[in-house]
Amino acid sequence: MTKPKYPAFFGSERELLESHLEHNRLTVRHKMEGLTRDLAIRRLANSPTSALGIVKHLTEVEGWWFRHNLAGEDWQGSSTDEFPDAEFDIFPEDSVASLLHDYDFACEISRDICAKYSLDDLAQRPHRTGSSPSLRWIYLHMIEEIARHNGHLDIYRELLDGTTDRD
Image (cartoon, rainbow, N blue to C red; front, top):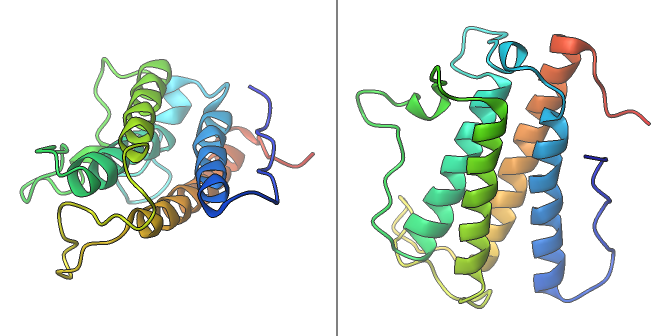
C-alpha cells in the first residue's frame, strides 16, 4: 500500500470529517505494511501495547463508538473489569493479515451505521458523563483517537525495524 493521500481541503463538513477519518484508518494499514508478526507483537515498554495490539484496540474502538454507543447495539468488546487490557491481547492464531482484516470489517460496519445518521444525531447510549455525544463529536473523537495511535505506530516502526514515513 502506498502512503495514503492527504484528504481534500474543501468539501462539506461531513465530507471533511469522513475523509479525515478514512485517511487515519488507511494510515493504520500503511504503518503496518511489511511488519512481520514477530515484530508486530513485540512490546517495547512495560505495557500491554504492541503494534498489532494497537490494531486490535482500534478494531474494538470502532465497535465501541459506532455499534455500541451510536447505534445502541448490544456490542461487547473483549475487555472486562477482571481483564481491562484484554483488547491488546494477541493470540497464537492472530496474524497481521487477520487482524487488519478484522479492522477493515469493523470500519465497514461503522461506515454503514454512520450512513443512517446526521451529524447532529445523538448516540443511543450516553457517554459515562451522562450526555450523549453527537455523530459529529464521535467523528472528531475517532479522528483524534486513530491519529494518536498512528503516532504510536510511527514510534513502534522506527524502533522495531527503522521504517519511517519520511519521504
